[in-house]
Amino acid sequence: METLTLFEEHDLTACTTFGAPVECKTYFPAWDERVLVQALDEARKKDFPVALIGQGSNVIFCTDYFDGAVIRYMDDKQRLKLTATDDPEDSDYAFVNIFGGYLWDNAVLACVKMGLSGAEALSGIPGTAAAALVQNIGAYGCEIKDILHSAKVYDRKDGSINVFTPADFQFGYRTSIIKQSVTESDFMYYPTPRYIVLNITLRLKKASELVINDERLSKTFNIELGKRVKTMYFRKRILATRRKKGMIYDADDSDTHSTGSYFQNPIIERDKLEMLPRDIPVYETCSQDKVKISAAYLIENSGFKKGYAFQKSDAYISTRHALAIANYGHATYHDVLELQEIITNGVYNKFGVKLHPEVNLLKNRNDVLMRSNLRTFTSLSGVFPGDANGHFSLNSDFFDFINKRDV
Ligand SMILES: Cc1cc2nc3c(=O)[nH]c(=O)nc-3n(C[C@H](O)[C@H](O)[C@H](O)COP(=O)(O)OP(=O)(O)OC[C@H]3O[C@@H](n4cnc5c(N)ncnc54)[C@H](O)[C@@H]3O)c2cc1C
Image (cartoon, rainbow, N blue to C red; front, side, top):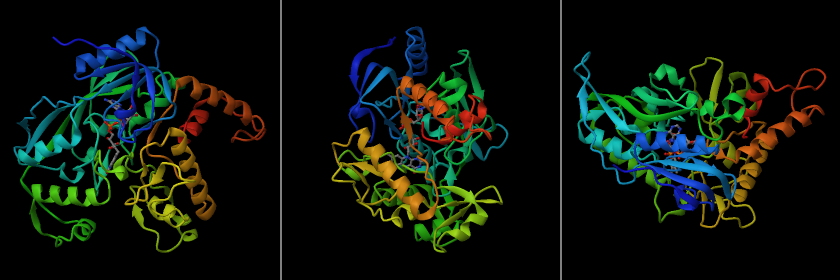
Protein backbone atom coordinates (compact mmCIF):
# COMPACT_ATOMS: atom_id res chain seq x y z
CA MET A 1 0.00 0.00 0.00
CA GLU A 2 1.37 3.43 -0.93
CA THR A 3 1.89 5.82 1.96
CA LEU A 4 2.05 9.55 2.46
CA THR A 5 5.19 11.20 1.10
CA LEU A 6 6.37 14.58 2.27
CA PHE A 7 8.77 16.95 0.51
CA GLU A 8 10.43 19.80 2.40
CA GLU A 9 11.12 23.20 0.77
CA HIS A 10 9.41 22.24 -2.46
CA ASP A 11 9.40 24.27 -5.68
CA LEU A 12 5.77 24.70 -6.84
CA THR A 13 6.42 26.71 -9.98
CA ALA A 14 5.40 23.84 -12.25
CA CYS A 15 2.33 23.07 -10.10
CA THR A 16 0.29 25.97 -11.50
CA THR A 17 -0.66 26.75 -15.09
CA PHE A 18 0.38 30.41 -14.66
CA GLY A 19 3.82 29.30 -13.48
CA ALA A 20 4.93 32.19 -11.25
CA PRO A 21 7.90 31.15 -9.08
CA VAL A 22 6.90 29.96 -5.60
CA GLU A 23 8.15 27.50 -3.00
CA CYS A 24 6.54 26.01 0.08
CA LYS A 25 7.68 24.68 3.43
CA THR A 26 6.09 21.23 2.99
CA TYR A 27 4.51 19.53 -0.01
CA PHE A 28 2.29 16.45 -0.02
CA PRO A 29 1.21 14.86 -3.30
CA ALA A 30 -2.13 13.07 -2.70
CA TRP A 31 -3.22 10.61 -5.36
CA ASP A 32 -6.17 9.10 -3.54
CA GLU A 33 -8.79 10.02 -0.93
CA ARG A 34 -7.07 8.17 1.87
CA VAL A 35 -3.75 9.92 1.28
CA LEU A 36 -5.49 13.30 0.98
CA VAL A 37 -7.18 12.88 4.38
CA GLN A 38 -3.85 11.68 5.88
CA ALA A 39 -2.08 14.76 4.50
CA LEU A 40 -4.76 17.08 5.93
CA ASP A 41 -4.39 15.36 9.34
CA GLU A 42 -0.63 15.63 9.22
CA ALA A 43 -0.78 19.36 8.42
CA ARG A 44 -3.27 19.89 11.25
CA LYS A 45 -1.03 18.08 13.75
CA LYS A 46 1.86 20.33 12.72
CA ASP A 47 -0.46 23.36 12.90
CA PHE A 48 0.47 24.34 9.34
CA PRO A 49 -1.79 26.50 7.20
CA VAL A 50 -2.88 24.36 4.23
CA ALA A 51 -3.07 25.32 0.57
CA LEU A 52 -4.88 22.56 -1.31
CA ILE A 53 -4.50 22.57 -5.07
CA GLY A 54 -5.56 20.37 -7.94
CA GLN A 55 -3.98 21.15 -11.30
CA GLY A 56 -3.33 24.74 -10.18
CA SER A 57 -5.23 26.22 -13.12
CA ASN A 58 -7.19 28.71 -11.06
CA VAL A 59 -4.74 29.83 -8.41
CA ILE A 60 -2.03 32.43 -8.04
CA PHE A 61 0.18 32.17 -4.97
CA CYS A 62 0.61 35.78 -3.82
CA THR A 63 3.95 35.09 -2.22
CA ASP A 64 7.24 33.54 -3.29
CA TYR A 65 7.22 31.31 -0.18
CA PHE A 66 4.11 29.64 1.18
CA ASP A 67 4.83 29.09 4.86
CA GLY A 68 2.80 25.95 5.36
CA ALA A 69 1.70 22.73 3.66
CA VAL A 70 0.68 22.54 0.04
CA ILE A 71 -1.34 19.42 -0.75
CA ARG A 72 -1.88 18.52 -4.38
CA TYR A 73 -4.92 16.30 -4.93
CA MET A 74 -4.38 15.10 -8.44
CA ASP A 75 -3.60 11.75 -9.96
CA ASP A 76 -1.48 12.76 -12.93
CA LYS A 77 -1.12 9.13 -13.98
CA GLN A 78 -4.93 8.88 -14.26
CA ARG A 79 -4.86 5.20 -13.34
CA LEU A 80 -8.63 4.81 -12.97
CA LYS A 81 -11.06 3.76 -15.66
CA LEU A 82 -14.49 5.37 -15.38
CA THR A 83 -17.62 3.26 -15.45
CA ALA A 84 -21.31 4.12 -15.55
CA THR A 85 -24.22 2.60 -13.62
CA ASP A 86 -27.88 2.92 -14.53
CA ASP A 87 -30.09 5.39 -12.68
CA PRO A 88 -32.61 2.96 -11.10
CA GLU A 89 -35.32 5.65 -11.25
CA ASP A 90 -34.92 6.55 -14.92
CA SER A 91 -33.32 4.12 -17.36
CA ASP A 92 -32.54 6.99 -19.79
CA TYR A 93 -29.91 8.26 -17.36
CA ALA A 94 -26.73 6.88 -15.83
CA PHE A 95 -24.46 7.81 -12.93
CA VAL A 96 -20.70 8.22 -13.31
CA ASN A 97 -18.62 8.34 -10.17
CA ILE A 98 -15.34 10.21 -10.68
CA PHE A 99 -12.35 10.25 -8.36
CA GLY A 100 -11.76 13.90 -7.34
CA GLY A 101 -8.15 13.95 -8.48
CA TYR A 102 -9.08 12.82 -11.98
CA LEU A 103 -8.51 15.46 -14.66
CA TRP A 104 -11.86 16.95 -15.59
CA ASP A 105 -11.38 16.84 -19.33
CA ASN A 106 -10.31 13.18 -19.24
CA ALA A 107 -13.59 12.51 -17.41
CA VAL A 108 -15.58 14.39 -20.09
CA LEU A 109 -13.87 12.40 -22.84
CA ALA A 110 -14.60 9.10 -21.05
CA CYS A 111 -18.29 10.05 -20.63
CA VAL A 112 -18.66 11.00 -24.29
CA LYS A 113 -16.98 7.71 -25.31
CA MET A 114 -19.39 5.78 -23.06
CA GLY A 115 -22.32 7.31 -24.97
CA LEU A 116 -23.33 9.72 -22.20
CA SER A 117 -24.35 13.29 -22.86
CA GLY A 118 -24.42 16.40 -20.67
CA ALA A 119 -20.78 17.16 -19.89
CA GLU A 120 -19.52 17.81 -23.45
CA ALA A 121 -20.04 21.62 -23.34
CA LEU A 122 -17.48 21.69 -20.50
CA SER A 123 -14.84 20.00 -22.69
CA GLY A 124 -11.30 21.32 -22.49
CA ILE A 125 -11.59 23.06 -19.10
CA PRO A 126 -8.37 22.34 -17.20
CA GLY A 127 -8.31 21.16 -13.59
CA THR A 128 -9.49 18.22 -11.54
CA ALA A 129 -13.01 16.85 -11.17
CA ALA A 130 -13.09 17.85 -7.48
CA ALA A 131 -11.98 21.45 -8.07
CA ALA A 132 -14.58 21.81 -10.84
CA LEU A 133 -17.21 22.17 -8.10
CA VAL A 134 -15.37 24.93 -6.27
CA GLN A 135 -16.29 27.66 -8.72
CA ASN A 136 -19.06 25.73 -10.48
CA ILE A 137 -17.12 25.64 -13.76
CA GLY A 138 -19.04 26.78 -16.76
CA ALA A 139 -18.80 27.33 -20.50
CA TYR A 140 -21.14 27.62 -23.46
CA GLY A 141 -24.28 27.91 -21.34
CA CYS A 142 -23.57 24.86 -19.20
CA GLU A 143 -22.38 24.69 -15.59
CA ILE A 144 -21.29 21.61 -13.69
CA LYS A 145 -24.23 22.10 -11.28
CA ASP A 146 -26.54 21.12 -14.18
CA ILE A 147 -25.14 17.58 -14.32
CA LEU A 148 -23.97 16.98 -10.76
CA HIS A 149 -25.85 14.30 -8.82
CA SER A 150 -23.82 14.35 -5.57
CA ALA A 151 -20.30 14.55 -4.16
CA LYS A 152 -18.40 13.08 -1.24
CA VAL A 153 -17.06 15.88 0.94
CA TYR A 154 -14.61 15.91 3.86
CA ASP A 155 -15.42 18.54 6.49
CA ARG A 156 -12.27 19.99 8.06
CA LYS A 157 -14.31 21.23 10.99
CA ASP A 158 -14.90 17.80 12.52
CA GLY A 159 -13.24 15.31 10.16
CA SER A 160 -16.61 13.90 9.02
CA ILE A 161 -17.28 12.67 5.49
CA ASN A 162 -20.69 13.54 4.06
CA VAL A 163 -22.57 13.24 0.79
CA PHE A 164 -23.60 16.65 -0.57
CA THR A 165 -26.39 17.18 -3.09
CA PRO A 166 -26.28 20.12 -5.56
CA ALA A 167 -28.57 22.10 -3.18
CA ASP A 168 -26.01 21.68 -0.36
CA PHE A 169 -23.36 23.35 -2.53
CA GLN A 170 -25.37 26.60 -2.94
CA PHE A 171 -23.95 27.01 -6.43
CA GLY A 172 -23.94 30.40 -8.07
CA TYR A 173 -22.07 32.13 -10.87
CA ARG A 174 -18.47 30.93 -10.37
CA THR A 175 -19.09 30.21 -6.73
CA SER A 176 -20.25 27.61 -4.24
CA ILE A 177 -20.32 27.00 -0.50
CA ILE A 178 -16.86 25.44 -0.90
CA LYS A 179 -15.41 28.68 -2.25
CA GLN A 180 -17.25 30.74 0.37
CA SER A 181 -15.91 28.54 3.17
CA VAL A 182 -12.30 29.60 2.56
CA THR A 183 -12.78 32.67 4.75
CA GLU A 184 -15.23 31.09 7.21
CA SER A 185 -14.62 31.18 10.99
CA ASP A 186 -12.23 34.13 11.05
CA PHE A 187 -10.00 32.64 8.36
CA MET A 188 -9.45 29.45 10.38
CA TYR A 189 -9.31 27.37 7.18
CA TYR A 190 -7.68 29.97 4.92
CA PRO A 191 -6.44 29.64 2.19
CA THR A 192 -8.18 26.27 1.68
CA PRO A 193 -11.92 25.63 1.88
CA ARG A 194 -13.46 24.05 4.96
CA TYR A 195 -15.14 21.53 2.63
CA ILE A 196 -12.85 19.26 0.66
CA VAL A 197 -14.30 17.39 -2.31
CA LEU A 198 -13.13 13.77 -2.42
CA ASN A 199 -15.14 12.49 -5.38
CA ILE A 200 -18.09 13.50 -7.51
CA THR A 201 -21.00 11.71 -9.19
CA LEU A 202 -22.53 13.02 -12.41
CA ARG A 203 -25.97 12.12 -13.75
CA LEU A 204 -25.88 12.02 -17.54
CA LYS A 205 -28.26 11.16 -20.33
CA LYS A 206 -27.64 7.99 -22.28
CA ALA A 207 -27.19 9.59 -25.68
CA SER A 208 -24.45 9.90 -28.29
CA GLU A 209 -26.17 12.85 -29.94
CA LEU A 210 -27.60 16.19 -28.86
CA VAL A 211 -29.83 18.81 -30.44
CA ILE A 212 -28.43 22.34 -30.77
CA ASN A 213 -31.38 24.31 -29.51
CA ASP A 214 -29.60 27.37 -28.16
CA GLU A 215 -29.21 30.35 -30.47
CA ARG A 216 -25.85 31.40 -29.05
CA LEU A 217 -24.40 27.92 -29.48
CA SER A 218 -25.79 27.73 -32.97
CA LYS A 219 -24.09 31.05 -33.87
CA THR A 220 -20.79 30.31 -32.08
CA PHE A 221 -20.34 26.95 -33.76
CA ASN A 222 -22.13 27.74 -36.97
CA ILE A 223 -24.46 24.77 -36.55
CA GLU A 224 -28.05 25.15 -37.71
CA LEU A 225 -30.52 25.74 -34.85
CA GLY A 226 -32.42 22.52 -34.07
CA LYS A 227 -29.82 20.30 -35.77
CA ARG A 228 -28.90 16.95 -34.19
CA VAL A 229 -25.13 16.35 -33.89
CA LYS A 230 -22.90 13.67 -32.39
CA THR A 231 -21.66 14.58 -28.89
CA MET A 232 -18.10 13.66 -29.96
CA TYR A 233 -18.38 16.04 -32.95
CA PHE A 234 -19.67 18.81 -30.66
CA ARG A 235 -16.80 18.18 -28.22
CA LYS A 236 -14.29 18.46 -31.06
CA ARG A 237 -15.82 21.76 -32.23
CA ILE A 238 -15.60 23.10 -28.68
CA LEU A 239 -11.98 22.02 -28.30
CA ALA A 240 -11.05 23.68 -31.61
CA THR A 241 -12.77 26.95 -30.60
CA ARG A 242 -11.20 26.94 -27.14
CA ARG A 243 -7.77 26.25 -28.64
CA LYS A 244 -8.13 29.25 -30.96
CA LYS A 245 -8.87 31.44 -27.92
CA GLY A 246 -5.94 30.03 -25.91
CA MET A 247 -8.38 28.40 -23.50
CA ILE A 248 -6.81 24.95 -23.53
CA TYR A 249 -3.64 24.59 -21.50
CA ASP A 250 -0.62 23.90 -23.71
CA ALA A 251 2.92 23.84 -22.30
CA ASP A 252 4.25 25.41 -25.54
CA ASP A 253 1.73 28.25 -25.79
CA SER A 254 2.24 31.17 -23.37
CA ASP A 255 -1.26 32.56 -24.01
CA THR A 256 -2.56 29.49 -22.16
CA HIS A 257 -0.22 29.93 -19.19
CA SER A 258 -3.00 31.70 -17.41
CA THR A 259 -5.85 30.96 -15.02
CA GLY A 260 -8.51 31.15 -17.73
CA SER A 261 -10.73 34.15 -17.05
CA TYR A 262 -8.91 36.26 -14.49
CA PHE A 263 -11.96 38.45 -13.78
CA GLN A 264 -15.63 37.59 -13.31
CA ASN A 265 -18.26 39.15 -15.52
CA PRO A 266 -19.74 41.80 -13.20
CA ILE A 267 -23.36 41.42 -12.10
CA ILE A 268 -25.04 44.83 -11.84
CA GLU A 269 -28.52 46.25 -11.17
CA ARG A 270 -30.50 46.28 -14.41
CA ASP A 271 -31.23 50.01 -14.10
CA LYS A 272 -27.46 50.77 -14.10
CA LEU A 273 -27.32 49.53 -17.70
CA GLU A 274 -28.41 52.92 -19.00
CA MET A 275 -25.11 54.39 -17.78
CA LEU A 276 -23.14 51.95 -19.94
CA PRO A 277 -22.61 51.90 -23.71
CA ARG A 278 -25.50 50.34 -25.63
CA ASP A 279 -23.34 47.75 -27.38
CA ILE A 280 -22.02 46.10 -24.19
CA PRO A 281 -22.89 42.38 -24.20
CA VAL A 282 -25.50 41.70 -21.51
CA TYR A 283 -26.54 38.30 -20.15
CA GLU A 284 -29.63 37.50 -18.12
CA THR A 285 -29.24 36.13 -14.57
CA CYS A 286 -31.75 34.27 -12.43
CA SER A 287 -32.70 37.59 -10.83
CA GLN A 288 -35.12 39.92 -12.69
CA ASP A 289 -33.33 42.98 -11.29
CA LYS A 290 -29.79 42.02 -12.13
CA VAL A 291 -27.83 41.40 -15.30
CA LYS A 292 -24.36 40.14 -16.05
CA ILE A 293 -22.17 42.27 -18.32
CA SER A 294 -19.09 41.39 -20.30
CA ALA A 295 -15.85 42.03 -18.40
CA ALA A 296 -13.91 41.50 -21.65
CA TYR A 297 -15.82 44.41 -23.24
CA LEU A 298 -15.11 46.66 -20.24
CA ILE A 299 -11.40 45.80 -20.30
CA GLU A 300 -10.90 46.27 -24.05
CA ASN A 301 -12.91 49.49 -24.09
CA SER A 302 -10.88 50.92 -21.23
CA GLY A 303 -7.80 50.85 -23.46
CA PHE A 304 -6.40 47.43 -22.52
CA LYS A 305 -6.12 45.62 -25.80
CA LYS A 306 -5.22 41.95 -26.14
CA GLY A 307 -1.45 41.56 -25.64
CA TYR A 308 -1.26 44.57 -23.26
CA ALA A 309 1.55 44.45 -20.67
CA PHE A 310 2.56 47.13 -18.19
CA GLN A 311 6.10 48.40 -18.75
CA LYS A 312 7.47 45.28 -20.42
CA SER A 313 6.32 43.02 -17.60
CA ASP A 314 6.00 39.32 -18.43
CA ALA A 315 2.39 39.31 -17.17
CA TYR A 316 0.15 40.34 -20.06
CA ILE A 317 -3.39 40.18 -21.37
CA SER A 318 -3.55 37.08 -23.57
CA THR A 319 -3.26 37.93 -27.26
CA ARG A 320 -6.38 35.79 -27.87
CA HIS A 321 -8.62 36.45 -24.86
CA ALA A 322 -9.12 39.80 -23.14
CA LEU A 323 -10.12 38.19 -19.84
CA ALA A 324 -6.99 36.08 -19.38
CA ILE A 325 -3.78 37.31 -17.76
CA ALA A 326 -0.97 35.16 -19.11
CA ASN A 327 2.74 34.65 -18.44
CA TYR A 328 5.40 35.11 -21.15
CA GLY A 329 7.76 33.12 -18.94
CA HIS A 330 9.17 35.14 -16.07
CA ALA A 331 6.14 36.87 -14.55
CA THR A 332 6.02 36.99 -10.76
CA TYR A 333 2.96 37.31 -8.57
CA HIS A 334 3.86 41.03 -8.14
CA ASP A 335 3.52 41.48 -11.91
CA VAL A 336 0.09 39.83 -11.89
CA LEU A 337 -1.24 41.87 -8.98
CA GLU A 338 0.11 45.07 -10.53
CA LEU A 339 -1.64 44.32 -13.83
CA GLN A 340 -4.82 43.36 -11.97
CA GLU A 341 -4.80 46.73 -10.20
CA ILE A 342 -4.08 48.71 -13.36
CA ILE A 343 -6.94 47.00 -15.22
CA THR A 344 -9.36 47.26 -12.27
CA ASN A 345 -8.63 50.99 -11.82
CA GLY A 346 -8.79 51.66 -15.56
CA VAL A 347 -12.19 49.98 -15.90
CA TYR A 348 -13.52 51.70 -12.79
CA ASN A 349 -12.38 55.14 -13.94
CA LYS A 350 -13.92 54.67 -17.38
CA PHE A 351 -17.17 52.86 -16.56
CA GLY A 352 -17.62 53.07 -12.77
CA VAL A 353 -17.79 49.25 -12.59
CA LYS A 354 -15.61 47.32 -10.14
CA LEU A 355 -14.08 44.11 -11.51
CA HIS A 356 -13.51 41.20 -9.13
CA PRO A 357 -11.01 38.41 -9.70
CA GLU A 358 -12.38 34.97 -10.52
CA VAL A 359 -8.99 33.43 -9.74
CA ASN A 360 -8.17 32.22 -6.22
CA LEU A 361 -5.41 34.39 -4.76
CA LEU A 362 -3.59 32.24 -2.20
CA LYS A 363 -1.71 34.21 0.45
CA ASN A 364 0.12 33.30 3.62
CA ARG A 365 -2.46 33.23 6.37
CA ASN A 366 -0.50 35.61 8.59
CA ASP A 367 -0.38 38.23 5.84
CA VAL A 368 -4.15 38.04 5.45
CA LEU A 369 -4.82 38.21 9.19
CA MET A 370 -2.45 41.17 9.53
CA ARG A 371 -4.13 42.89 6.62
CA SER A 372 -7.62 42.35 7.95
CA ASN A 373 -6.57 43.72 11.37
CA LEU A 374 -5.08 46.72 9.62
CA ARG A 375 -8.33 47.20 7.74
CA THR A 376 -10.31 47.12 10.98
CA PHE A 377 -7.96 49.73 12.34
CA THR A 378 -8.07 51.99 9.28
CA SER A 379 -11.85 51.67 9.20
CA LEU A 380 -11.90 53.83 12.31
CA SER A 381 -10.64 56.67 10.16
CA GLY A 382 -13.40 56.05 7.65
CA VAL A 383 -11.34 54.40 4.91
CA PHE A 384 -13.68 51.39 4.98
CA PRO A 385 -17.44 51.48 5.38
CA GLY A 386 -18.57 51.47 8.99
CA ASP A 387 -21.40 52.90 11.04
CA ALA A 388 -22.31 56.58 11.22
CA ASN A 389 -19.21 57.19 13.34
CA GLY A 390 -16.96 55.30 10.98
CA HIS A 391 -16.70 52.35 13.39
CA PHE A 392 -16.48 48.90 11.94
CA SER A 393 -16.53 45.75 14.04
CA LEU A 394 -15.29 42.21 13.38
CA ASN A 395 -18.76 40.87 12.76
CA SER A 396 -20.27 39.06 9.81
CA ASP A 397 -20.68 42.37 7.93
CA PHE A 398 -16.97 42.85 8.12
CA PHE A 399 -16.20 39.41 6.73
CA ASP A 400 -18.85 39.85 4.10
CA PHE A 401 -17.17 43.10 3.15
CA ILE A 402 -13.68 41.67 2.87
CA ASN A 403 -14.87 38.46 1.23
CA LYS A 404 -16.19 40.57 -1.59
CA ARG A 405 -12.79 42.18 -1.86
CA ASP A 406 -9.74 40.23 -2.87
CA VAL A 407 -8.15 39.26 0.41
C1 LIG B 1 -6.57 27.85 -20.09
C2 LIG B 1 -7.65 27.84 -19.03
C3 LIG B 1 -8.98 27.81 -19.39
C4 LIG B 1 -9.99 27.81 -18.41
N1 LIG B 1 -11.30 27.79 -18.81
C5 LIG B 1 -12.29 27.79 -17.88
C6 LIG B 1 -13.67 27.77 -18.28
O1 LIG B 1 -14.01 27.74 -19.46
N2 LIG B 1 -14.62 27.78 -17.31
C7 LIG B 1 -14.30 27.78 -15.97
O2 LIG B 1 -15.22 27.79 -15.14
N3 LIG B 1 -13.00 27.78 -15.57
C8 LIG B 1 -12.00 27.78 -16.48
N4 LIG B 1 -10.68 27.80 -16.08
C9 LIG B 1 -10.37 27.82 -14.64
C10 LIG B 1 -10.01 26.44 -14.06
O3 LIG B 1 -9.66 25.54 -15.05
C11 LIG B 1 -11.14 25.84 -13.23
O4 LIG B 1 -11.51 26.71 -12.20
C12 LIG B 1 -10.75 24.48 -12.62
O5 LIG B 1 -11.89 23.89 -12.07
C13 LIG B 1 -9.66 24.58 -11.55
O6 LIG B 1 -9.25 23.27 -11.25
P1 LIG B 1 -7.83 22.99 -10.62
O7 LIG B 1 -7.73 21.53 -10.33
O8 LIG B 1 -6.77 23.54 -11.46
O9 LIG B 1 -7.96 23.79 -9.25
P2 LIG B 1 -6.86 24.70 -8.55
O10 LIG B 1 -6.58 25.87 -9.40
O11 LIG B 1 -5.70 23.87 -8.14
O12 LIG B 1 -7.66 25.17 -7.25
C14 LIG B 1 -8.74 26.08 -7.39
C15 LIG B 1 -9.42 26.25 -6.03
O13 LIG B 1 -10.05 25.04 -5.66
C16 LIG B 1 -9.62 24.60 -4.37
N5 LIG B 1 -9.57 23.13 -4.44
C17 LIG B 1 -8.79 22.37 -5.23
N6 LIG B 1 -9.08 21.07 -5.04
C18 LIG B 1 -10.08 21.02 -4.11
C19 LIG B 1 -10.82 19.97 -3.50
N7 LIG B 1 -10.57 18.68 -3.75
N8 LIG B 1 -11.77 20.30 -2.59
C20 LIG B 1 -12.04 21.59 -2.27
N9 LIG B 1 -11.36 22.63 -2.83
C21 LIG B 1 -10.41 22.35 -3.74
C22 LIG B 1 -8.26 25.23 -4.20
O14 LIG B 1 -7.92 25.35 -2.82
C23 LIG B 1 -8.45 26.57 -4.89
O15 LIG B 1 -9.07 27.48 -4.03
C24 LIG B 1 -9.65 27.81 -17.04
C25 LIG B 1 -8.28 27.83 -16.67
C26 LIG B 1 -7.29 27.83 -17.66
C27 LIG B 1 -5.83 27.84 -17.25
